Image (cartoon, rainbow, N blue to C red):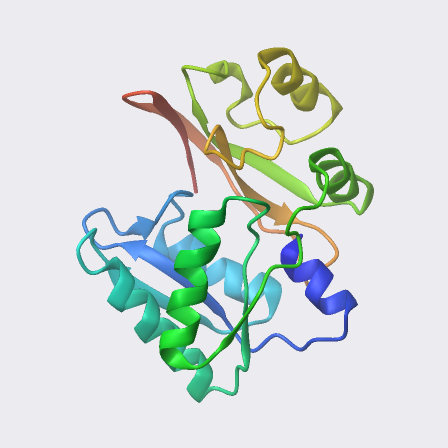
Amino acid sequence: MALHKMLEQGHEPVCLVVMVNEEVGRSYFHGADSTMLERYAKALGLPMIACPANGETYRTAFETGLSKSKAMGAEAVCFGDIDIEQNRKWEEDRCKAVGLFPCFPLWQQAREKIVYDLIRLGYKCLIKSVNRSVLPMELLGTFVDETSISVMKSAGIDICGENGEYHTLAVDGPVFREPLEFQIGDNIELGDYAIADIK
């Protein structure tokens, strides 16, 4: 949605920057493997800069990735944050370190507007992980739609998942050149979180 809004404003994307957990070989938080990341780059028609890191090297790896994007012509970095100040501050500091301008096109927008705009525009967002302490595992592998939003509202959570209540993988929508094909494997339980193994 953040990328969508930047495109609406007339900005031209240069590349995608993604943080990869080097211990498991998957993107942080969303768990996309290298094949899926390659497919994302193709589906969005953008080169991808993968930044392998662990907890101790996350900051420097991110800054290295941003520096590479700057060398490709990037002038700004787009983030999808809504209102968590400490996250925004961290991202602003990383941008400042490499001389790029941070952009937050969703900042302080109403939660319901963001989610219902996402659906209205035709984005297909697959629920990849849930915090089992607040959401049922049955949501794994379903899309963000009226039904899943109703479950989230009943659970009293942030329907945008801003606090990590759930994570999604967007697989289709207006910014995609082609839909991302996928298969849903088994669910994996990791402490409070459950993750759908999507390939």
